Amino acid sequence: MRFIVLSVLALLALPAAPGLAQSGPSDRSIAGRLPLFARNNCQSIRDPGNQLFCGDAELAAAAERLSAAIEARLARLPDRLPAIEENAIWIRQRNLGCGIVGQTAVRTDDFDRVKACLLKVTEERAAILRDADFDCLAANTAAGALICADPALALTETELNGQVLGLIGKLDPTAARFAFAEYGRWTRERDRMCNLVGKENVPLAELESAEGCLADYLKHKSEEIRSAKGDPKKVFGRQVAARSPDTDAVDFCAARIHAANSCGNFLRINRVYALDSQMSEQEAQVTGEIEMAVLAPFTTCSKVATTCTGTCWDAGTGRPQAGAGTKERSGEAFNVTRRLRIQRTFAFVKAADGWRCREDALAPVSSGTAGGGS
Image (tube, rainbow, N blue to C red; front, top):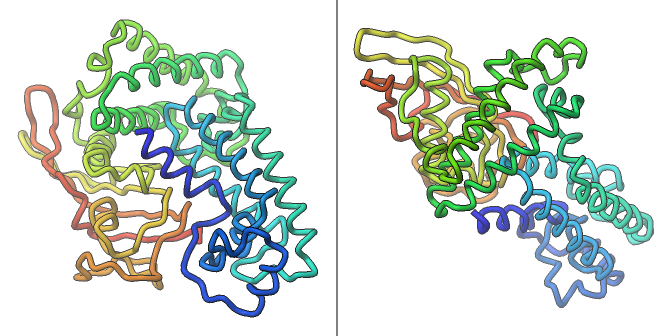
């Protein structure tokens, strides 16, 4: 798990992912202001902001301090993925705020101003991330906003996070991957139980009726972990079936598939909906919609795409690409924070302990869209 986290940190510590670039006159002119440009092979970086961080010692040092602050923040969060996504969004906003637009090269005349801006906001960001209270303030969900606004809820969640991290830290990497996926599923289930799904932009006062539900959930999970007396196997991996073939069942199935294929390196499951179901006494088919956010770039037609999203994608239309296979296509990749939605029908069979998912892959999907975050 530490390898996964550090891999993502390497991606997010700098303004954008490096790519192959052609060196032109603008590159050479700005290179004269960057002492480390040649030594660090900065000409291979396409993004103008990335070039500055690569070639300037002061900016590079600031980026290292930010990377350390990011790592420290992720280490204290059981569900790291929202923080990774939030950081990627900040990176895009920072570039725009400092006058870096897309792939337009930084002019030599603007170098001092752009560098000063990047240095200032990077240092400020590192300082903010060192404050544990920011974990609460950066919540980008309705439940997160409610918890942050109530000191008692915030304290209870912090304690629960510590308990979860302590248990997962005792697991081997494979078991830990499944445990993190299960924790994410708990959170989505909690939001559904407390009627908070899709209410990120609702005024806080209108969400207060859900506070009791959140408090009960956090208390129940904390008591469950305490009763396990330090044994993670008494908390994680026990549920292998859903109570009924519904949204929770689809979520359980999708989370298990993602964990089995290490999809958490690239994607976060944000929301799950059951759209339709057909049920007999012993079998059921549930059509579900799954929304995912991209956490690390991956090629639109690749093993990651087909395994973790169920299909290859047409980068131009944002639609599934039928019959494309898994051949990698250079230059066609999903950017961080891109949103993907897929629809798929999942088969379930009734067992003594509930409804068990019979699917071990997301492919093939019946429909899908890719939008946002470009």
